[in-house]
Length: 497
Image: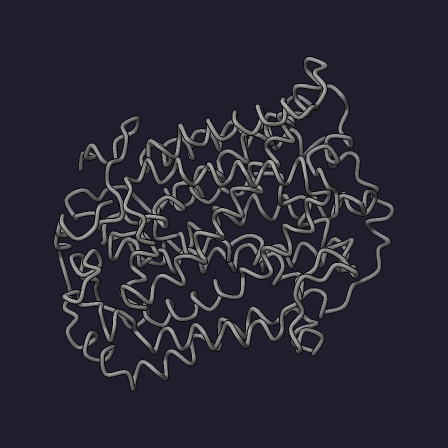
């Protein structure tokens, strides 16, 4: 079926968060493979792998197992949740209105937007480091404040160009750019592997099983969990007939293949360069391990990989901002988003002294409410037969998803309870003496072994599964569900998007 103007490569996508009609859906599950492959070929996987060795004491074999479980497992979850996108035709947080209510959904949406902003800031900061290093190596131009700002703006401009055009252009670029930057990464990986101290690698002692459990949680939080509430954004143009299992497999393998390679390599490098895990500038730390003539292709690959990840994040953040109730067009929402990202990049490069510490701390804290949302949304997805497109866009009392006062209290209660309990087991710090937050049970067996995220997700799912049975408004909405062959068009007067 021919693509509409909303989903044509090179044209500006004018659709906001309103559901995509069946007549405009096209494509195949393989698009999800390239979406997540592109998002995960950036060099941020290397310091994650280094952390498994330097901070968790794992050897390379244990780190590889952790990488497989954390990467494939977390993105299988992303793929499973993206089924909602092809079922309802709308972005993830818009579909979440059917779960939390049109008002209650504001909390999860705000958290998601903050998560996306954080990832964008990390990507932008790292890419600016790469561009600064490239200018130094290629032209001898030394880093200074003005040049730093220019490099940030260049990366943001590239992101805007892709994200502003929209879904079809993103899908097209993801596939073809993955070939180019993936090949560059393979070449760089070959040379980095040559710097590995294999003697130390093969004689490294075994780490504890508990450290592996912590590692799986760390990798999951640093990879798939951060994308769990955006998968539907990229599946919403896919036909309903595509089996959900194909979306799960495509997502898991698309992200898992590059992540396992990069995380495992980071673990290998940490045997000889343990400081890689805590480098304030990971781009330069990795660049120093390469022969000088390899610096240029490496830095180009680093910049490109981060760009592929960032334009996805910015696209989702724009949709999330509209869902939050900010009445702007999608293209303007993208622009507002990168303004905040630019400010964050300035802080990380010119003010903050530590790059990786705040990164892990940020992920640790936001992983709690995100995991709680995943638990609630997953239970609803399992039991839900359809989404009402008009009701998703109706934020007034007439909406089918108004529930009670605009809130589905069973979902909100489960989300809140899981967050509180999850924080009890959470400690977020940049070092032994710089603890940002420490829950009273953070040093219990569950907290010390990094199982707080499992408790959060499982508790949210269990509590919601119980409460929804006694919530009359939710039971009534479920009883009214009817299988839909065509999403009803959204009323144009209810919400501008």
